[in-house]
Image 1 (cartoon, protein in one colour):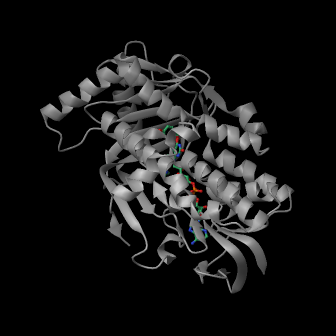
Image 2: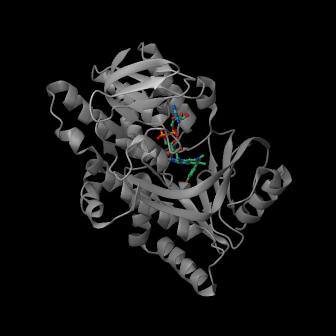
Length: 404
Ligand code: RFL
Ligand code: PHB
């Protein structure tokens, strides 16, 4: 079998890349370990930046998103017995976020690919990448796929990144001493916008998927198990952390899905080796407090599709050679913002009274100063291309991570 771009992984990164390449007349085959049903049900992110929405709409896969997605003009920071709204319409006029489940984006992309005759192989075993320096190929389930380029879009636990020879990648990493317990429930949202709540007992987030479905997260110890969290405990903890302002009542309902996510920041540089290009979680992950992971995956793929368009158009490798550098500015901005939101809102076991006072002062500043609130707002809705373009150039040279 032969194709121009072999894509490993059918998450948002792999599927969108395949679609954007198709729009440019470039062929690809997507190889996915899981079943279609599994990836269409996998509950994950829910917040799309303005730039992500624009990309999906421009690519012709945004019709349902525009119909069913919920446009939000602000978020609430809740702490110390009061709620404080970060008003996007005032701070970053014309920019907003759209709440629309990641699995809905995945469904829309799969439908578009299959309708256009795209080749997605689900439930493929033993995917391995070979000969990355020249004439690369992929093997899976006893078959061989020859390609000009391989796109590693197989997430944090995929095979692409570990296939890069030792010593090539520098890895930058931050583990957090807690996790998030995520809950999807059949109950109407208790508020119109997302609520990020800081408490002595830990962080809680009120989010949603539709007028009938809510999404919640709780900060939990890193070593906690789902067995420690019977439904009554989840609801009582959510109530304790969210019902902290007068007049707010948490609506409860049937829990449809729940799971625990570790919290980690991670970047592997450069995001390419030979003919292998990494995109999305395969190259970097962020703690979810900034709602950036899926948006970064989309941003990477936008850059990669353009670079591949140039390469297959006139054979020029200049954009491909600069792929990693072009992405890392945004990647590091998102790392910083995600770390900043995480430290602003979570409780750390080793925090002393001084550290807690600093955190509260920081929250007071963010919720009272227009300049500080704008910093949060412009990062949250997503910075435009030119604002992040230069950051990686310097940052990439300044630091040395662990060699891998
Ligand atoms: P994905 O979605 O992990 O897709 C990778 C795909 O590759 C497949 N795969 C393989 N296929 C073949 N062979 C192998 N050896 C393979 N190994 C893996 C996998 O099955 C999978 O289908 O990566 P991608 O495309 O880079 O997308 C990244 C996003 O999924 C991720 O960043 C976000 O979900 C992160 N995230 C959030 N991002 C946001 O932008 N906004 C949010 O609000 C947000 N909230 C979240 C999140 C992630 C969370 N979890 C569960 C990690 C909330 C949570 C709780
Ligand atoms: C979600 O709705 O899943 C969600 C929202 C905001 C975040 C993370 C996840 O920061």
